[in-house]
Image (cartoon, rainbow, N blue to C red; front, side, top):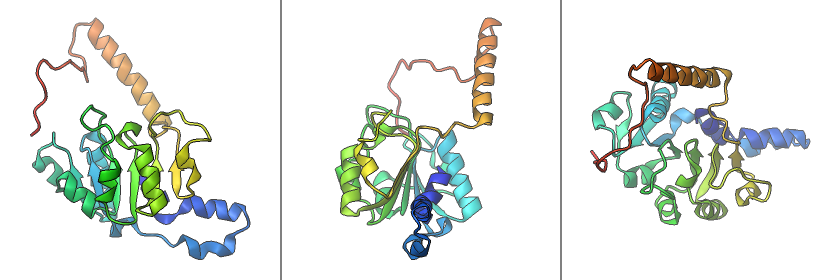
Length: 220
């Protein structure tokens, strides 16, 4: 997620493509922003969202707003982030990064109405689930200049092909759902699965076990 933020803020992808086309002298087009000067809104404060927030605060000096109705404010504050409701986060963030699980309640949480509430020139980053963002609403916001760039590792309806509407925009970066595609992460997934199977066969508690709730979750 942080890599995508940096790529979008520094217009790195566009600069690389310009050089490939012989456009070295066009570098004045690629003046960007430093991540530490931006207000970053984190939607979803689980293991990944909280770690991203911590790196942004302590590594870059960014001001981080965080929204997660299931996480206590004390947990958000513990990494230096600022608890915020969704309305405040949308209105105040220069960069919005999605780290939420997909549920029936948050499907298309970034729709046309949500984009209208954002700052002009906002950057959208999504490394969680594509269906959190309406493709049509994002395309409209990009065309109107409300969104200055989008950096996405996930897209609604993936896998996508070259006809996808978001690929028409030079200021959109899309990667094919590879956030966890490192040798270390893939090895960790394999080891986690082996530990879980071994624990189950030996009658021991299974790490990360998901049990269907008997009652609806309450929002804290």
